[in-house]
Amino acid sequence: MMYEKVGPARFISHLDLLRTFGRAARRAGLPLAFTQGFNPHPKITFAAPLAVGISGEAEFADLELTEKIPAPFVARALSDALPEGLRVLEVRQLKGAGPALMAMVRSASYRVEAKTCGPVTAGELKDALGSFLSRQEILVERKNNEGKKVLYDLRPGIFVMSGRLDNDIIKIEAELKTGSSGNVRIEEVLEAFLKSSRLPVQGGYALFRNNLYTVAGKEKKMLWQT
Image (cartoon, rainbow, N blue to C red; front, side, top):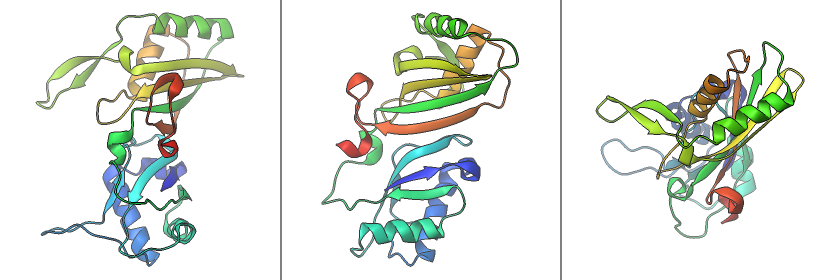
């Protein structure tokens, strides 16, 4: 299933998203499959968690049903039952068991829109991006499993990063490492870039995840292309 998570829905947490889809499927009358055990829950899995506040324009999830139902009917029924900002874009029926979605994801593409609060030229933006990407290390602080702060190098996980000006809006596009083998957060990349570039940018920028891929870099493939 491919869906979008935009507008007010971008503030739904990952755990609440699972509950939201479960409730929507029940309202739509879809025969959800549930796990066994003391606390059964619907068999819904997501490709990659999306941080609160980031819009997802092409997100992916697996939904298991106990009966075979035409994919177009599932898409319409779910979309009608979901809250504003959540919409099913396409549903495909899987033939047999396949690899877990999260294990397939290798990278994700993002778009950032930030409003300037001072003059910025296209040349200044290009130079700032070039200087940022030429760094051998881009270190940020993260907390490890023990809650201790450690330094993490973002640079190996930034595959592509570019930018352009649209009047007083800076638009940045980036492809970052994502998935179970490691994760680079667009928020961390943006904060590190703005700190090093010192470009005059207001707070409250908009973040979007455009797509998820099974292969990173020039040969990247969209999740459903494999």
